[in-house]
Length: 146
Image (cartoon, rainbow, N blue to C red; front, side, top):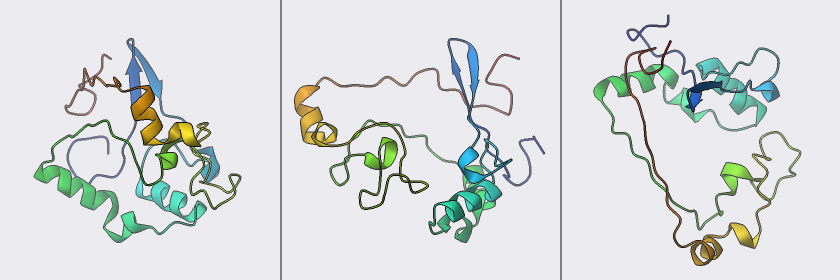
């Protein structure tokens, strides 16, 4: 209902860069009117489309997530790499034994290969770092300018 009370039913994602609000893209791969926000229906459509197990629904979906948030959580942000699958699940074709034109496999433009391996990255860019800043938490609509 757009309030901070009641069961969690939707998560809307947007980004603010240099004062400009950037809306999350529509999930066109999930069919017409799939939307751009996370709902239980959106998660189920995604799992059905990609032939994944709907573990999120089995654990209670957004309602259970909302109850967990009500109990309190700690935000943790980190910079890490993945020696098992070289982070291909994030921005490349993964799993690697599936054709890249299968829905859900091609996740971004990263070509993979040896330049995606953590050992290569640690050697060639050892000073890599990240700064997390201007993170805001508050009631709905309170963290951006109207």
